[in-house]
Image 1 (cartoon, rainbow, N blue to C red):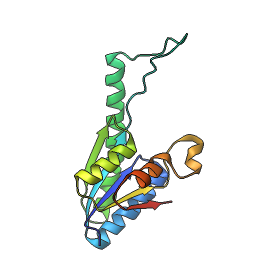
Image 2: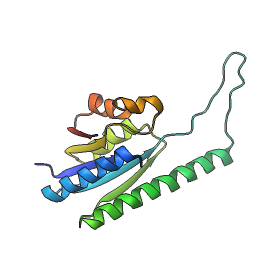
Image 3: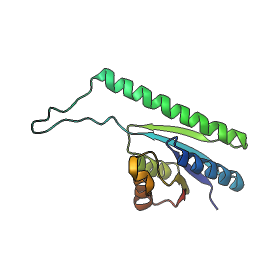
Image 4: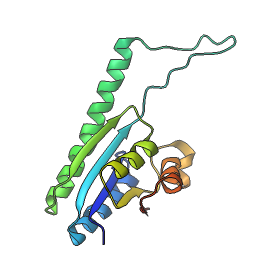
Length: 150
């Protein structure tokens, strides 16, 4: 039914449930698996009016990017371990400096994925009580079927 499944994670508990479900589904279907962890760009406040804003130095940008890469690496290593435990391999991708929904949709399309599996919400304040904004965007804007795990 599905030959190539894209699993999305931000390292949260809900995302972990989606990963477990997606890995089990891929194993049952003998499907190829790609796992994506997306890290958003550093928010820059250019200010306005009487507000002077904040523009990071190159060192601050580099430090932020390194921290994002390290965090994504840890999350993806955990997924690799989960996949290996049930006997499947997965392609692991870190997409830096991108909006998660955009990166998920673009990756699914460019890699020929025929299903996206993702958690119902991530780590965002009170929004986590509702369907997550990134999940909602993938559902609304993507052309690939989405399995949302709660």
